[in-house]
Length: 212
Image (cartoon, rainbow, N blue to C red; front, side, top):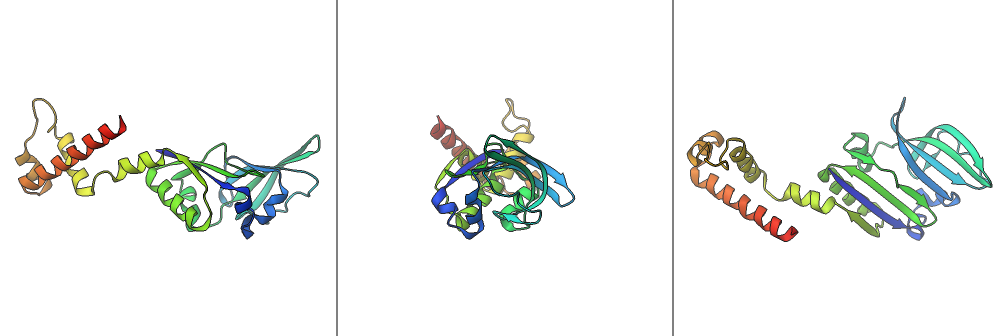
């Protein structure tokens, strides 16, 4: 699992037509994921002054308001707890499928937008690339780079060979299997197995030394 946190400056996010109307809110804060008849939805809290509650069905920054769960006043501030449905799009695919989960700290305010996500490295990396194509991301602080490197460090054939060698006890002392047995199991020549293992070992050692 990895984490992804990025931000977008206020002057940039509110210049995008989809988000322009959100400038009237002091803040919109993520509060969790909730099930609904419309599928998996976001629960958000809006904070504003002297503006009416958003009607059910209206879109807020690409999300459609499904329900108003609660609303209350705190001094001059209006708080509303909304359920918003994710639109069916490639951008939200990972969230809809459950591979990516929004985290607390995700919010939109006069300072701009901050998004915090948890998920598998591959899906987070893909989502970040999609977002960069449509939104001007200004800052990324994340463990995503580490997760992606770990997942893409070895080609699939090399990783498969290394996994088999580990599972069959090739790296135990004494060894529980040999190159000959590995080559039979994998349907590869002994030289190919040896080359794959050497490549994997070299890359893992380099990664270890770089991360010290």
